[in-house]
Image (cartoon, rainbow, N blue to C red; front, side, top):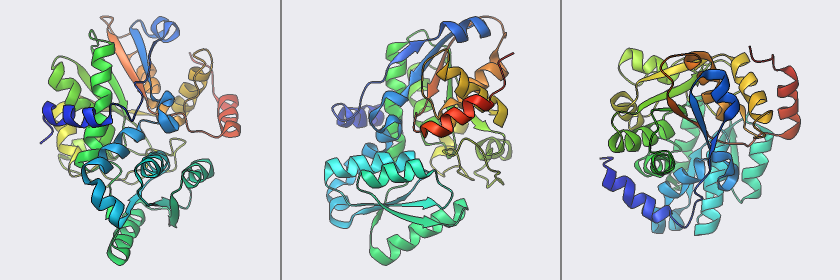
Length: 323
């Protein structure tokens, strides 16, 4: 499973359905870190997040069944919007289970795209249980937001773009939660360019992938609230974890303060609206790689820009200056 041929087949199916997002050079981050830094801006993707790749990747291989039964999934917000959009375009009824604390901005965006929203208590395990219950009682097809062959392969399309846009890339930083994006991007990039170092990035408050790599198996890790509300998975997937273990160098952790500071930097001077979950790669760049020699060519994946304007301004005002 997860050969380049499989990823290429999924990419062909997504070719006219998703955008090729820009890769932007960052003079500011390059000057501050001593590296050649580029930003892969998935905030310019349809629904302003990479998750539309996963959504189409998960629906297209079983489209007839999805149309007949409808689908159910769990999401903290961006996959909810992605699969709602893809479902609307493909004629699939979509139900999304979301935590009660999910950002209202993301809830309303998914609802406006046609998804039925069902809330559950604020525990990752509760979301999983609710999805299973709806599947069992209503017969809806489960499309997992990250632990699914189709969604992983959909995410891998980003890896092809990255290597084509920046053939000389040496390091890739990818935000991670359950591992769907990290697994897909790493599997493609490392099969195309084995010498590239791929790192996942997680908040210190939500470190399930980091803990799992240390334990050698998918492991539930206690979580604390984080500004990165899209990275809530308390355990990696059974499909994603082996890929991460095989292809990823390590998972880097960042603090809440560092995430907020990265969001503020991306707004000014980069002029990019990036949500906290999408900015953790920049936080890791500044914490773990700044000043490291020799200079390298680094691509940072900015996974999305779905953040309510008032909250964005509050975050920026609270950010301490870069030092």
